[in-house]
Length: 117
Image (cartoon, rainbow, N blue to C red; front, side, top):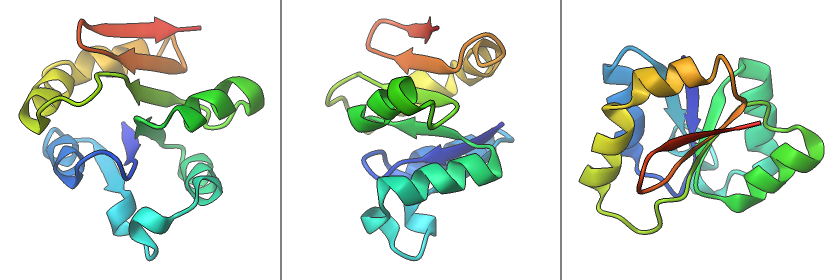
C-alpha cells in the first residue's frame, strides 16, 4: 500500500512501513517539510493515490465534508510513547490493509482498529 505520514507523526513510522514492504513518504520528504499545507498534502495524496496517516482532525473533517482525502488512517491514541504507536500500527498493518478494502476511514485508538463508513 501507499501511505503518506503527516507531520505530527514520527518519521520513524514511515521507515517502518517501508521496511514492511509498503511505499510510505513523510512530510519531511517534501521541500516545505512540516510547513507543507493541508491542501498540498491533499493534492499529493490524491495524485499519488496514497492513504493519509494523521492525528489531525482537520483531515477527518475534510474527509467527511469534501471526500478528501479519499482514504484516511486517523490516529486517536492521544499522546503515547512512539514505540507503543509503532508496535500498534506495524503489528496490525496487514489487518489495516485488508480493512481498507472495505472502509475508506480507519481509526487506530488505544483499544484497537475501527473501520468507519
